[in-house]
Image: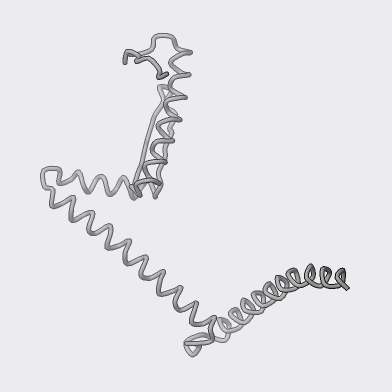
Length: 157
């Protein structure tokens, strides 16, 4: 059974108004989060209470979202401006992702022992330490797998 519809008007009772504000604010923040996750949308939500308290949510840097909004509004009648701003934003995001991919590929090559000539002695030492820690974790995992097998084998004898 669904809830009945309420008349949308100002709640006169201060306590009821405050309780309703808190519940609806939390619901609104939850919806903003869900929209950002489910639809991969850039969301920024700003709410001020009657007492002037600020509540906000952003799945990205709120300042950059507001700047993007301002740029989009500066040419409100020109839809090409919004399209250009969006294209510029996604080009920047794409460049960041390409840079991350390049860094991960370099790191992977280094871990495999390739492309080491560009590394300094300090970077080589850091890579060596990282590999040694990885080998230690691998050996520890192997021991944890073999010990129960050995105990099981001795119980069979």
